[in-house]
Length: 239
Image (cartoon, rainbow, N blue to C red; front, side, top):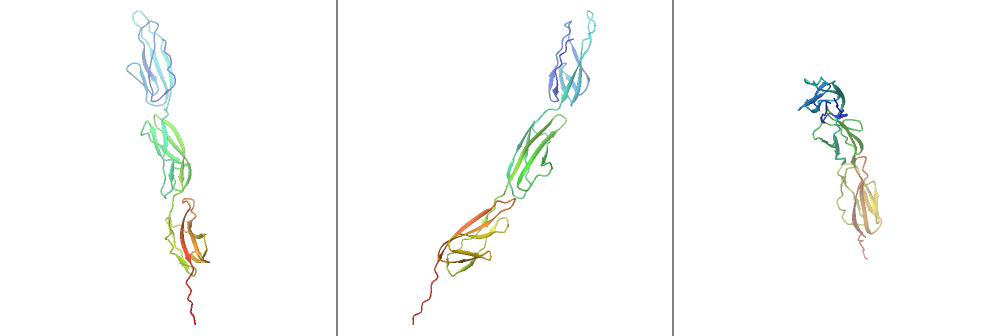
């Protein structure tokens, strides 16, 4: 019997067996051991990983004696699935950020870790993502980097009415994140004292900047308001 070994296989494969006898009589195949099945006489499939031993035999007839059996050993390993990672770039908003994993074939169970842990991260930063498929028939690993960018915050800073040089006005602004902000003079004859008190050193256009420096999770933001400062009217009395 000539029975060529089909070689190592993945557990999801189906292999057509072929063998010939020197007498020309048909060869029969059977599983001697291991996680294999033969259907349709020559179609070898697998039920798990391991070593499958397949026997080819021919019982002979009135003219030919039974042939010596030939056994082939076939190593069966898990198939490698496709693992694709999506949603790797996200923005911070205070909620956990997880990636989306799609496998081929679809629907395979996946274990995902972030920097080696199971919990999806919340804080802005970069995280090593590892997605593992490990089932009876499939084993594979996908990897990538989840980048959580700083979130965007806004500042509510109402327009400052025009002022006279002798005025002093209090400033107020609120960041959408609740983080504390600061005020500064962008340009012009303005002075800020005690963090929020705006006064003037002369007439002209003054720009006031309300800013929030941000933190690890929130990007910095600044809003500028302009106002016009005019000379105060003086009272003149003539005797």
